[in-house]
Image 1: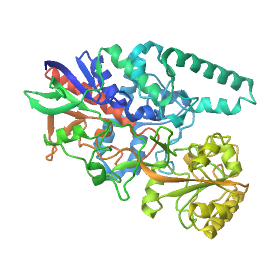
Image 2: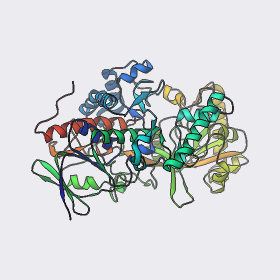
Image 3: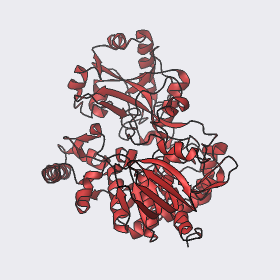
Image 4: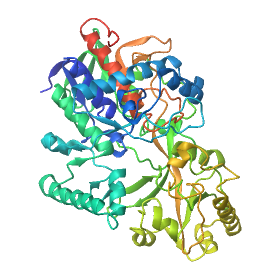
Length: 563
């Protein structure tokens, strides 16, 4: 029989934003429910590096960063401009550190800052090379018990040995284990622990990157007292009294007296809105998690909510390469930093010519593909480049290359002209481009696109290579290529909200009891990608703002500023 429950706060969607919102609400002593439509928690965060862009936390001092709220806002003003309300950015800058410090002081959710993690638009005034991008501390998740099985596994192509997650430190050790006893010891311990975990849990219990953030937030939510339910879908949502009434599939009803916080991941897999909001040709594949169907959007739009306006792009982009796995599913590999900006790798179009600076951010690369009609583009390298840096799903050392050549993912040819013929692009154009790139590699100066001239671009190159860490010659046969197309990695256009994360209507008035965070909220970055983790950082921050306001509302008031 259907039954009815009452909670102070109900959070819908269990990615980083939803898990954080549930944690913050429960930490306030509120009766909190977190529901997730899929069988896993974590959303797209579980697939990601888990980087969290929150400036001016106390962690900035650990890497000797010099920063201030004024500097951050100046950078965002230069990057974003009028594509989002400045008041929303101010709310983020003010509350971001409070959100992170609350998690670190009161939960197992712990972060660290990297000594060198530059903003993407480093050429703009107000940027910095360190202190703003945080990453989750690796997490031994044994304490989660059965909840370990709730965490969405990482993308298989980002793991080794059938599920072992590795971060940048692990990768460096694995590549150096034949040269360093310290790296060998690290690798042996890493692999040995993974084997034990597989026998005990059926998966790795050592979580890194996005899985670490999800695992920590899940434990934080549970420990704080939040009720977490997966495979739970909402059929209807309507006001009741001062609250919001959710009817679930199956007929059960839940009254949220303080409010409902939407954190379902955006519109990206909505059956019609995806085609309406993405450019042509429609991106056929996305590396995002399957839960962001936009179903909750339809329910709140019926209550007067609306989408935000003015974003430079409705989604954030990255170049993707794809292949069909043995089980028939599609592997969708986002080319973030590991290959495009490395020496000896170049991106070309059908004419065999470059169309953009390969070392710019993945979002800008995807935009450049659409702006120039370069869909697909081809990442081209030689035997030395493949050996040193890999290419897409081919790992450094050319690991896995033979199988990927066999199934057509990686193209191989004895000469550049033969490679061009295989790709169906201009052989003369490719030969001329490689000759020009080899000249740039000698001088260290890219005369066409200025590749490698910002701190961010150089950070993703090879620090041991000179004179420009992003430019290298291409000439050692055989030659290789992978095709890439733009793929959406998250929504930038979302539901319009005010500085308290409340959904607002066409008259900019708050809709009682409705909140949003994460990709359900109109991005404060306005469809621009200023730095690593600019989706997760605001998601956690506005989860903090929304949760506190909803809890206060349940108690008959509104949230005051934190001390």
